[in-house]
Each structure stands twice: as structure tokens, then as C-alpha cells.
Image 1 (cartoon, protein in one colour):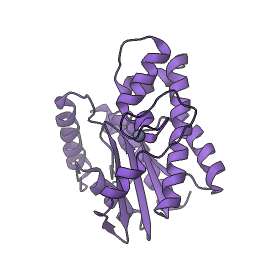
Image 2: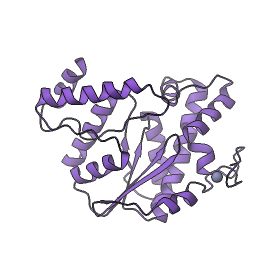
Image 3: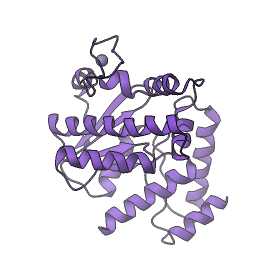
Amino acid sequence: MDILDEIRIHFPDKNLAAIGFNFNTFNQPESRFSTFRELMLRAGERFRTEVKLFESSSLNLLRIYTILGLSGSIGMLIFGDKIRLHVVTNGEIRSDLDNFLKVFRHRQIDEKSKYVCPHCRKRGCIDVLLTYSSIIRRYQDLSGQEPILYENLQLLGESGEPAARKIIEENSILAARTFALLKKELPLDRMMISNLTKTGYDIFTDEYCKLTGEKDAPLNLCSMSLSDVILATAEMVRKEMLGL
Ligand SMILES: [Zn+2]
């Protein structure tokens, strides 16, 4: 339970433990989820604080919207085993966006890409470039390596392995284009991205702000590891609440 001691050092205020998190289930062993749930429950007991575990990303988004006291709308696009979109508007989870997403996920974000989508026949649409399987295929094509887990690709990229690093850099630019498009088209007041590494988020932020002319980048709901999830989310929320 070293991790709990770490949380206590970073966040001595008992009222602020884990608030929201994103759990990456793509190609992950089921035991990872049970471990996470156990950790959350024990954290609750130890800090005598309320712990809620939402298995649904849309509920996570609603929880964060409420905790941060947001108004208007916030959208979270998830690049996972498939492209998913969650939007909360005026405190309600939107359920009317399935048709929008069906079209949106085939928006072209790289017209010079060598990847052509088998569904929309376009070169470089969101779906053919940014689902986990698309990303892993791009990494394989570039590196000549065997398929790896998306999470391991991120770790490799952070450690400086050239092919993984290049894919992360490309992804960040492509994700920024996607987010800029989405924010304008729906439109949305705020955005949240998930699962970006520090390097990825920095590149994403630069590009997103350049494209939109905004000063504030979307929030990053990080899920690199259990400790990162808890620490990054709580830190993010703390900064947001204190206006830092
Ligand atoms: Zn497509």
C-alpha cells in the first residue's frame, strides 16, 4: 500500500482523494480491474473519504463536470478500441450524438496519409489513424516490430524509443486537429482528452492552441498506471479548483 502513503504525502487534505479516473481496459487482463477496484475501496477506508468507482466514461465525465463546478458543455473524445464521444451539457449526459459520431469519426485529418479507410474510403480519416489498433498498426509498419499493447507503446515513446516516439508525436498532432474540429462543429465550451503521456500532451497542447487560437488546452485525464491515474487526476482537479 505504498501508493496510499504517496497520496497522503502529496494530498494531506483527506477530503480530496481520488475523484475521477480513466481505466484503460483495451487488451488488459481482467485482474487489473479487480486490483484497481480493491485499491479504490481501501483508499476510501484509509482516508475515510467517499470513493466512487464509475465503470462508464460518460459517468466519469459527468462527475468531473460536477466537481469542477462547470457550466455549459464539455466533451471527451476517446481514442480507444473504437472512437467514442461523451458530452455533458448543462449537467446532463448527451445521448443524441450517435449519428453525429458516425459521420464525425470519418472526418479527414491527414489528406496525405498512406492509410485509406475501408469504410469511408478516405485517406487519413480519424478512424483509420487513431483507434488503438490503427495506432499499433502504424507503429508496426514504422518499426517492423511485433504488435504491442498501446500502453507499452506509450511507455516506449516516453523512454525515447524512436519509432514509438514518432508515433506519439504524430498522434498528438492528429488528436489536436480532431479536437479542434470537434469543438467547433458541435460546438463545445470545454474539452477533455484522456490517456496522453506528458510528451504527448505537451505537443497536443501546442498544436490545439495554435489551431483554435485558445489559451487553455483541454484537460488531460491520464491513465498511464494506477499511481499516475490517482495522482494526476487529483492534482489536475486540485489545480483547477484552486485556479492555479
Ligand atoms: Zn473513415
